[in-house]
Amino acid sequence: MATTIEQEPLYPQLPVGQEVIFVVSNNTIVASQLNVRFIADVYISDNNPTAISSTSTPIATFKTTPNNAGVGIFDFKQVVENYVSADNMAFDNSEYKGITTTDDTPHPLHLIDKYSRNKKAARWLDIEFKTQYTDANGDVQIDTPTLTNDNYQIFNGYLKYSDELSIFNNDFGFDLGNFNLSSDTDRFLTNAPATQYANIDDYGTVAYLAPNGNVSYIKLIYKNSSNVQIGTENITRNYGNGAYTNFGSEIRKRIVYFGCYPANLMRNGSSIFAGLVSAGTIQGGSIVVQAFNLGNSAISKAYTININCPNLKGFESIRLCWLNQWGAWDYYTFTQKSIRSISTKGSTYEQLAGTWNEAAYRVDSYKGGKKAFRVNATEKITMNSDFVSESENDMFEELINSPEVYILDGYQTDGALSALNQYVKPVRLTTSSFVKKTVANDKLIQYTFEVEKSKTLRTQSV
Image (cartoon, rainbow, N blue to C red):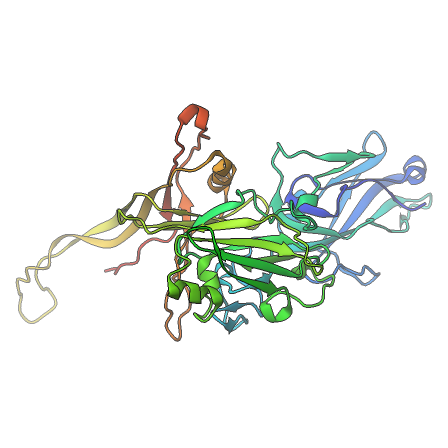
């Protein structure tokens, strides 16, 4: 008798930050044989779903004994979360300022001109279950394998304990239907509000799940400071624009990024948006971003990016980006007062005065006394948000909980051989607590965060 899958995830799309539970049984063997073990062979693919055969090699094999109810329970959370990670670099054939991304010319994901497929954020998961036992002759036997009912798409997200789960016949899971774009209420992979703010030189992306290739193009509507439309363009989802032309089972096509912030839309300086910047008509205006299908029907919310007016007080703008709940990126530009401080910690030694290894002793005034052998300097930045609404609380909560935070520099003129290392700077959020503010409690809502640059400042060593 083949092993039976009694319980499995309810939906085929799985954020890895949750219990990934499978329950299997084999009543006949459990009741009649000795030394029974349930076996799970786990297959994870970074391309197409694994076509499991007798020659396939699993990434891991797990065994468990039947519990008191005669079934085996597996939780693969700690396994699958090791096979997905944040996408920091763009996929091949995306573009930055018109230059195609390749292995030899890599580009940070945040800087893409148009689309990029995912590299590390998603994988296919397949599992084959078997029952092992010892028969009456003392020989170890394995019954006929049983495959999972679905190819599971795992991706680098997590579930909060407050996220509502669905359950049916003991199978449970989180319904990602609102992220599978099909109507004008569906969402990109973010919990941030549909209205965002950015400076004219800020970079940023949105991401969306693509289980069926519904997205045909993303429409961009440009409006001036009077909210009057002054331009529009449709960016077709195809291979030439960094995505794909024909939808298929490759996992890289199942999460797609799109560069839609002002600096991305500048591209190589010859785009429609770049013309509006040169004409001075988009400053203080906005960009409306929305996904459409082949029938020209809207299949996502309309997201609005308001372009900040210049800060008249001369405060330095600092833009942070961080990994959000769904494994994509959220962004915020802090436009109010910021303070940079540098702290140093080094080692010292005592140096002899004068010269002792030459023909004559000389009194060199620069020698002698306590000297710095090495200086390690760390920069911290304290930044303040503008006044914000309660709708941005969830976004800032994810910032303080995020394992990856970066400072993202704005549009620049690059050197001919630039490695683009100056744009994305890793930081560590040192703010250790976050109090959600409300209009009822606080009237005006403003937040202060502190970050520390991850890399120590370089200097000479003696």
